[in-house]
Length: 316
Image 1 (cartoon, one colour):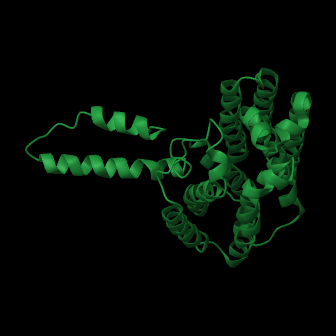
Image 2 (image 1 turned 60 degrees about the horizontal axis):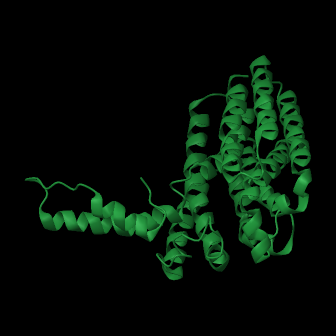
């Protein structure tokens, strides 16, 4: 269980039944309590209680690997490296975002209990934690070929600029799409040693996908965003959001289908795409933009959409 506020953490720890035994003394029990209390904010800082963010960063990488690499031991190694990279870099990105947005987060109901905004973790400690995760991410990146390393490093300006986009444009979701799908380019370079126009087709489909699911996500905060002056595609599109998301998801499916055709995949890939397309249609038709729980549910369901596409690409 991850508690979301200092009060919830204190209550949880106070009622946790730490039973003493011949192996655990009272002083050791207290030390364990203190360690747990000090660790929870850092787990919250990297969104350990919300793994969907890790998946949405990872899936574009895995889709690119599935399109470009045969199912071999080398492919499995690449999948594992991108998994590790997604975990540490998503964590580092969340910390950077929370540092930049700490004053905004304190004003928004959904984010006011984030560790930095709530004063549980200092900015200095957050920076040090972020630096450690970034170093780990660099070590993972260095396991790839030099072309992939260069492409990966080119994403730094996108990452650094993202938290500021909501202040200057109605389309921070577009910038997120450029950033979150950069792994397509890295993975393609890692397998092929270069990037070509086929890479850009898959990259473009990923950007359209992100525009769709993150516009749904942005509807959760639209009331607070208006109050504090933050911009988003949800506010820009307003009552036209459903039609726009339908267009974004249509472009997604068009790009994925083109990618499968260009890679000369077999019928399982297209069967997977049909099922995945139905899943996106269900999202678009079912989401209630005025219900934050509905928006979050539809947003999270994109994990299953990507898993379906990946399975088809892998088998095809």
